[in-house]
Image 1 (cartoon, rainbow, N blue to C red):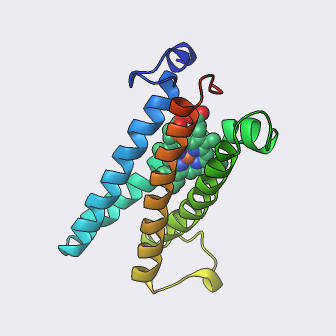
Image 2: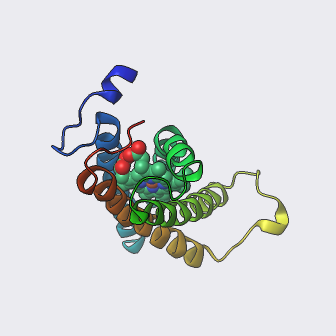
Length: 162
Ligand code: HEM
């Protein structure tokens, strides 16, 4: 598995297979989120709940599996190191938007599925507002993620690979 992830990517850039897979899956998750919004608008709330729960879970897996470690090693440990400043700024902005989207999104999922994990004081009923904010953050993080990809694997000749 590790060998496949470290092979050259399939999008014809300097990225390896893992980064191309992350980009492709993240865009698919963003499309899934958008389809889920469409289901809610049409009144299919049950299908909407399942779609958004699946998308939020897939997104969390991608972050924990493929983004946390490169973020720690190439951005936190090496901040303003040898690469152009834009590399650090874009990735940091992406991580902040992504982190807020992840936390708020998982919070909405836990609440919407009536999981009892959330303490009473933190429970909310204003679903629409929270869902709209987390959808906007997911989309922002995805767009910034595409910019991260272009910065890491298109503009820099020797990109960091994990
Ligand atoms: C809503 C949440 C998020 C979405 C939709 C998202 C999406 C993406 C996308 C599309 C890419 C480009 C593919 C790539 O370069 O591999 C990417 C890369 C990256 N993201 Fe995220 N991301 C999210 C959250 C985060 C968070 C919370 C962090 C920080 C811990 C983070 C750190 C990174 C890093 C370091 C990369 C480059 C990884 C590499 O290619 O080796 N992301 N993300």
